[in-house]
Image (cartoon, rainbow, N blue to C red; front, side, top):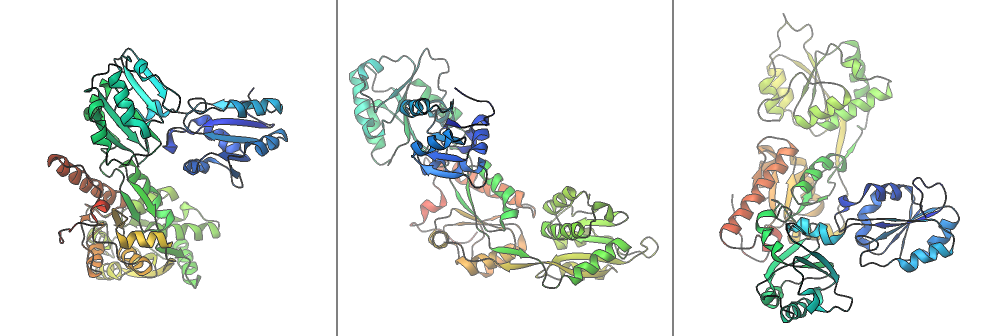
Length: 517
């Protein structure tokens, strides 16, 4: 029994997939969005709850009471590992729904048997006559499985991997048969060891595998050298600290994830309105009444502050008609475009106040009817831009549009990871993020890779005794993430060329590290 658009009670047995929350099906996400109750088996399903509506009740393992609530008309989602019916029996729970007269639905999930192999670079069933999946938790006749002529995938076998390998050899499988063991599949904890049936004991001795893990036996494993794409990402598994405001860090974190990193956003700056709003009120009035020739934005936060003032007065982007608008960099320009304003001036070189001044035209009384520039900025901004524009003949109204204050210290485990080398890299996007992070959490450990957005931020980092490893090619958060990825790729390539296993910086915390750039 099922319902495409449930309006009455329903229990949905939803496959949570193999581990990567982005592999959830569209139907699963839809049902999570309608659920009043979500039943979990494990905390690893936590990231999937972002699809749920506010106020959803989350319970662990107690389906009986959830069935009663479904009988009263609620939608209940029961999240199941992988696919609900593949080595994860829900027969009794489905029977309980049927006995209670409650509608139920079984939503397939992406099974680890194929997804983990894809993420490990092993073609599951390409050019083989057979693809066999077995559960080692059930009693198995390994001699029968030794006759598999294609790819053999074994669930729940990591604890008996060596014994299974010996049993397959005893059943007639050559001891040279390739084997891959993968744990944490499709997540940034994924780790794969390639071996053979005869060498399993030696190769797994210090691997420290735990469930969930898959054992793959067959010639398909040999393709991993050519097809591995996930574990070879430049920042795979790197824990990267992003010390910014939550709002600003979102796009940066998404880019880091695309490189295989695990970003952790730690607010170090809180953006608040100015203590006295009258200055901004006068600036907005002057902007509308023609007081200014130019408006220069030095951050996305400045754009946001002006936009909020516009909304307060019932204005929109049309109020910029007749004005020239400058933006200090790409991120600020994007915020303006989202507002409906296309900047007239952007630095072609360094994206900074200096870069903007270098592009700014001098005041010409014949061409410019007004010589005044509005600068809505943070309360801690430097005077570089004002000084540069004044020298070019412009008169500046330097207005505090917002205040930046130091955020509260992060939780103790984060502070310990920062100081103890638990992070592989930290990205500094401004001098204030350097000062504030050190102020609220202490200095990053010397094994942590320090990446900065530009020369001024590098100078501040060095003043605090930090070694700068990476600097963005241009002053944008996107370029900063790219520069860190390039650094990580070079580190990986050097390790592979030397015949070593690539290691994350945090894995080197006990060893000596050469200082300096």
